[in-house]
Image (cartoon, rainbow, N blue to C red):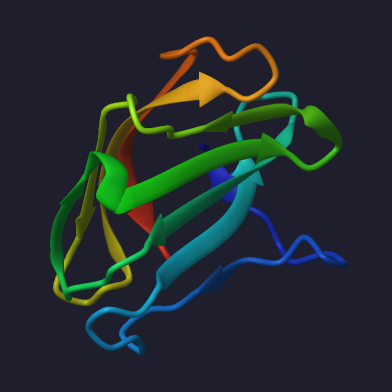
Length: 121
C-alpha cells in the first residue's frame, strides 16, 4: 500500500489502539492507495482475544483486504491461511505477513500481504 487516504463518507479509518483490555477485540481498519493508478483498497485487522502487544498467529487474528468499489474483490484469512501479525508496544503499529483466500473463488493463497502497518498515516 503506497499511502493512506483521507476519510470520505463511510470509508473511514479507525484503530482501537491501546484501549482494549485482555480478552476484548483489538481492531484496525484503514484505506489506502495500492498502485500508481490510485486504486483505493481497505484493510482490516482483528485480534479477537486480545492479550496485549505481541505476535498473533493464524486463527488468533483475521485479516481482510477489499475493494470498496467492488464487493466481489475481497480476500480474507480463513482457518487454513498462514497469518503472522505483530502488534508492537504502542499497539498502533507492527508487522503483518498473511496469505489470504479469495472470498469469491475460494482460492487459498490468492493474495499475500507483508510489511509494516501503522494506525496513523
